Length: 574
Image 1 (cartoon, rainbow, N blue to C red):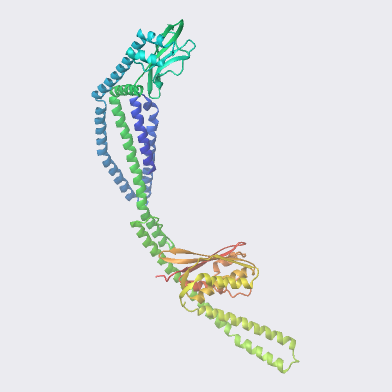
Image 2 (cartoon, one colour):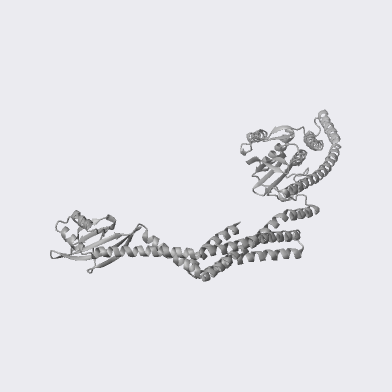
């Protein structure tokens, strides 16, 4: 589009310059405009050549869509060429007809007759003023009016003598005006440097008014006076005469350069039509790229999926017929990715359920003997207090404490293995998270919480108890990581993946970050960096989020903290 606008502007400028140069009989077109005439076509030709080279290279390399691009480009070029042929014939015919009309001899004769008439009128007015000035009555009329300097007497004398100048002024030897008569616009405003000889004064043009003047010297009472007489030409006469003169000269130039002018206009048209064809070719290359790009992207995406990359998406910025194909493909890949994720997650959960059952079995076996031993030692201690009280009681307390810890561990693993299916209802997310944050902030005086980024009115379809457990585990992990001192920031917003809308929650702490060696296994059961931790908190989080058809992941940097991301669907996914 930019090239087309540039071409139009260049064409308008060039056409005007050609008309002005030929009309003024100048040769600037041959010297100044030739480089300008060639720059745009040569630039476009270079751009088209580059595109053709790329097309040939892609064809040799066997790139997808090359054949289709060739056919589309040829179609555009042929269409532009066929459209330009009738236009070329019509334009050249119009130019020829216009030139015959412009240089018709009748127009030249009319212009010349008008100029001759104007010049003849001008000559007659000069002669009229000359005759008035040379009339023998003028000296007598002026001499009679000078003693009294009576303008009315002067006017009466001129009227009686049938002499009618538009202005008459009398100046004394000092150049002072002593008598004047006539229209204000006809009077001389400056009397300095009046010539000493009788005759015409220089023609004066002010605005659209032109004045003719003659000067006459006469003696009255021994004093020599200068008499200036003026005639006013019709308003705009000088400008009209000049325009007629220029029009006649232009017409003669057109007659002289008729064939040259036709040739220049024909060349000018070709210089406009040829870039237009090149622009059409460039547009064809661009449109061909736009048309085949979705097909090429589809082929490339299909190959990536075949190689195992199920996250492949095709970007579709425009809404057209091909965008629906891309959307269908993206929906298919999303379903494949979800199915694969579910399969992997199911395999992981099944494996850890088996681990939990085995661990429960292994831990339950020693519980009864430990408890019986503890009770036996306690009975002996009670029946014979004097016997080893200082040794038995600490041992008993240690055994009991270990039993309680093992029992707690067993219950947590058993709970993970038997996590029930979600009982979903509508959950308002913001107050749920704010209440949990408030509870932890109240019990940790040096803990700061920022939940200003939680959006109002976001509701999800979820199990309230399980979602509360998810955020409880995440907040507890953050607090433990910061040892109760630091800041937790929670932000929520809405995202869309395929046809499903999600609430994305980001929970950030400014703790030390997750160690590199644990990042790949943070969601695995019994993986923890805390001495008294069970390593089940994040495994339970992942399990609950998965059961809600959501997704959880994290970003962590040592020394700057950790951010957990949760995507929870706003509605039940299809």
